[in-house]
Amino acid sequence: MYNNAVLLSLKYYKKETMSNIQILWVDDEIELLKPHILFLERKNYNVTTCTNGADAIDLVEEQNFDIVFLDENMPGLTGLDTLAEIKQKQANLPVVMITKSEEEYIMEEAIGSKIADYLIKPVNPSQILLSLKKNLDNSRLVSEKTTSSYQQEFRKIAMDLAMVNSYEEWIELYKKLIHWELELENISDAGMLGILESQKQEANNQFFKFIKKNYQDFLTANDKPTFSHTLFKDYVVPELNKDQGVLWVVIDNLRYDQYRVLEPLLNNYYKKEEEYSYFSILPTATQYARNAIFSGLMPSEIEKRYPNFWKNDTDEGGMNLHENDFLTAQIKRLSLDIKHEYYKITTLKSGKELADNYNGTKQNDLTTIVYNFVDMLSHSKTEMEVIKELAGDDKAYRSLTLSWFKNSPLFEIIQKAQNLGQKLIITTDHGTINCKNPTKVIGDKNISANLRYKTGRSLTYEEKDVYAVRNPKDIFLPTVAMNAPFIFAKDDLFFAYPNNFNHFVKYYKNTYQHGGISLEEVIIPCVVYSPK
Image (cartoon, rainbow, N blue to C red; front, side):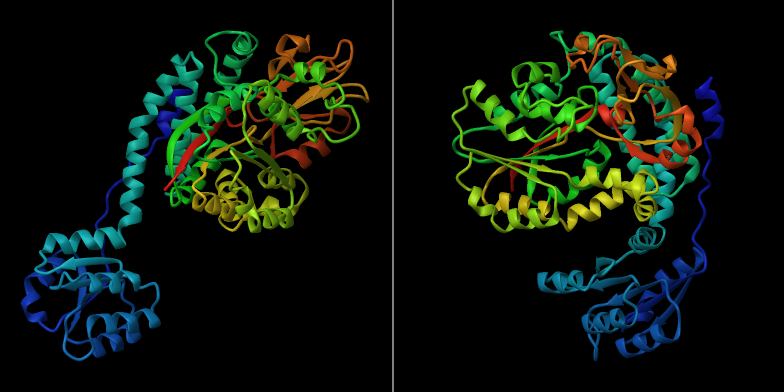
């Protein structure tokens, strides 16, 4: 069994005592601290002492210390003056300030100078030891604790995987896997991450079976998840009122784990009220999922109601040119008496222009922004070698997303929305998955070019690798042609054509794609915030 095999790989981590750590302790009454120093030396720490700031600065220049304990109140150079000098010479050297004073300005000065810790006299040996552990041994201790916690959680996740049987349970399980992925990536343990990856693969395999079995019924059932076409009605409309405007941001192709790394930045300006998890419709692609969001309709209903606006995969022209029209029609259909504006941002220039003029949205009840950067980033990995390097795996992909967001016009817009007192709703249309393995597909010249789903006549494929819907109307998709099914790839598979198989494998392996069925593509966040 998968579980037993993986369990054999779980490691036992042995705690090790810190040794060869060089400490500089600066205090004009150092003789009174002899018991503390002896205590540390018995713990195998090496302690160098001096009684004034000038000597301390010289010692820092001459020797390599791992940490400095610095008395704030000394004759001659004060602790704060000494701290400033030390930081100029060794900016990354941790300094622990020790003081008798509890005056606020001293604390603020010390913290502003980036001290590692702040202790109030009299200090006891345990406090000193704790500060050392926190500043020098933090990485190892966190690693051990994280690893130990995941080892305990591993069996529970494995049991959940065997029993999960509802969309609510799948949401909770996926969020749990994301939590551990983010925790384990910080300890740089390839073994543990490999074990988690095997659990994610197993989860995606089971999730595919769940979707294949239930998706069609979900679309018409009473007990079902919120899907793309009911997102606006379920989660946005309840937040609309005349007293407070709403900024609704749809970041194209934002996965749940990417949202998680953006969350701390948002928390500086907004307080989270509700976190919803909803399901993207199939295909998990912009043309289908985002049009469904703004229209409040499934794709076959859009085609029927707005034949001039809808374009199928094989049609010429843009697929998402009428989102504002769809949204306006949905607002009217829901009898909402609101003032709203819609913006689609696809370039840095247009993002900056909106950020510069965002205060003009103050009178809006609803301001909707579609931001396309993350989608462009995922597609660029296929085409640009530099992006392949920068986003080599999920960890790097998250890091790149965070770096972009932190410096983006979108983040500036969100801050301005907070200043205007607007609520924030942040969501996406679908996620994406790093594709690792090919599956063969054959079709005629009119087959769609999308890599995680295909539609068209004369499709030949590996039955076990796809969810095949022979009558698209069964899942409210338009029929491209007679006998033209939709097929959706499972797990981390991508489609490749046999006549040029090696080229496709080389070109698309380890690229981010969407349109298929995976936890990463289907289960996505919609989060409501109120301004702080």
